Image 1 (spheres, rainbow, N blue to C red):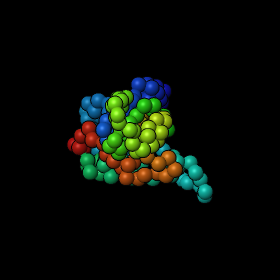
Image 2: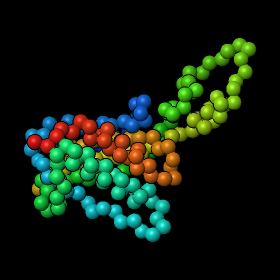
Image 3: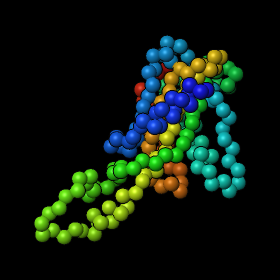
Image 4: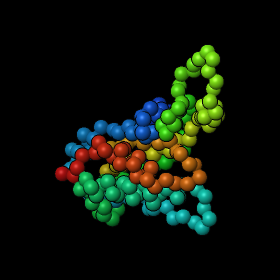
Length: 190
């Protein structure tokens, strides 16, 4: 477990968002996972049960994360079974983050380079964007790990970071897209 946590902390501290899509995926080397030949998986932990009136975003995001992982794993030919019967286990660690100086990919009239033109009045949209986009940007960070069910050795991992457009709700479409991108380097089941 400490190996997973150490890897997660190193990747979080080194990672910055740079992709145009607002999603960054850093997959591990799948060679060890491929060599295992495993085809059945289970969840490392039970699904989170949401309590009434809970505002915790992780409890709200858990069903979307699990559904997106299950969908992609099914497409690749892996089969979800009970934890006791699984060859490998899938777990995840989710955390919120903050990145400074990121440009929103949905804004077209924002430039990262300061400039001035003689005789040109600044337009209102540019001023509004400077205020709106000048603050820190919240990110969602997810580390998905595949562990051997018998030895709990790390088989494969991927870290996915994405800009959060609306911190007040879980965007299941964005979660699905981020997980699909994160699991895109994973090979099909043997």
